[in-house]
Length: 202
Image (cartoon, rainbow, N blue to C red; front, side):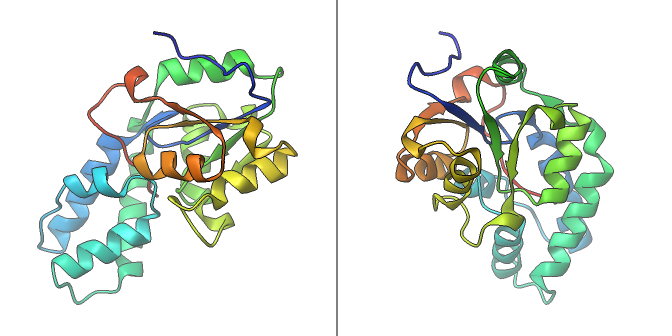
């Protein structure tokens, strides 16, 4: 089995965390550090359930489940700072990166991520892939996040390609639902990347 571009695709849209970027270990470690500071325990299984959602959604759930008397926005800031501090530990998902690089200059490409713009750009610069994409749509650019289709539809709009001819590369269930709702061609990258699951966050 080989990761391939669909014959009908006129544009490619890539998720970031868990698709282009093997960032899950850093996200997990960052959440554990934050929760240790808050005297609570981080349940790693919420990453499986919530992949694709912005970090504020994770923070709100952690706050609620642990009955924390701290603003979710403060938890987000703690998580972001810890993740950014360890950004050098993220790695590329080689199979997806290889396909992306082979398509560069031949077909329009975008990144559609649930991460903040700052997090997305830091990761992409670390992986040296920030210059490969015509369009980058982040959590800061849409009001409704995955599983809503807005992120991918905005990518298609900015690339000026009909959604039905956009191929989405995703690892998260919510992102796949977003691509399906958008009427796009979908490729599940999980068989081609390492790790049990992946997460999209700041």
